[in-house]
Structure formats: C-alpha cells, structure tokens
Amino acid sequence: MAEENQNFFQKVYEVARLIPYGRVTSYGAIAKYLGAARSARMVGWAMNASHNMEDIPAHRVVNRKGLLTGKHHFDGTNLMQQLLENEGVQVHGLQIVDFEKRFWDPNKELGEYYQ
Image (cartoon, rainbow, N blue to C red; front, top):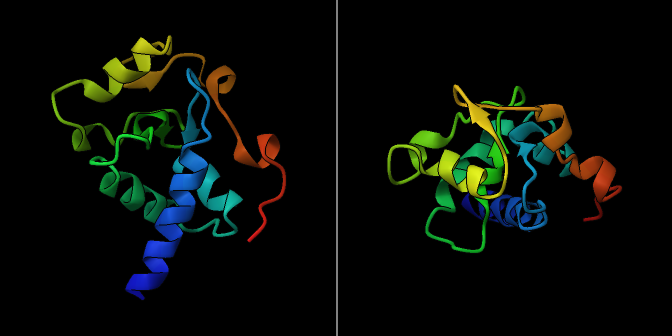
C-alpha cells in the first residue's frame, strides 16, 4: 500500500509541475485527471508531503471553491497567499478572486491521462 501511495504521489507531482504560473487547480481536478476522482484528499496529502521539494508548486493547488485550505501547511502565516499574489493571483479572505478565470483544468488542458 505504501508503494501504491508513493506512485500516486509521484503522478500528482507530475501534474502539479505542469500548472502554469499565475493559474490554480484543485485537489479534485488532479484526482479526476489521474482517474481517481474520489481521491482529492490523497492529492492533498501529496501536496502536504511536497513542501520540501522546491519544484512542486503546491501553492497553486486549492480546494474546489478556490479556498486556500492548505495554507496552514506552509511556513509563515500567509506564505501560500504571498506566493500566489507574487504570480498575480488575487486572494481575498483566503479565496482566489476570479477563480473561474484562474482555474487550470488538467482534463481540458492536458487531454486524457495516459498511464
């Protein structure tokens, strides 16, 4: 089971690395893209485990409503928000402003996932 999780985490990281600068996606969108639509929480665990990996833009992954639910996993009080704002993403009350316009859907942008 641990190896399965590790493989899933690696797939999550591959997708997360593709999220464009200034865009965001959701845990659920990544899970759905990977063919595991009910595994949004596992994507969250993968993002949480990625904070010591500099090449994973975990700050670009938010919940399905555009809320910065993972912010408490970042060092500093508002680091997740600061990283997003540095990319031109506006955040108000822990919510992505114009979430629909900023949303990057891997299913639409990358096409069908191949395993």
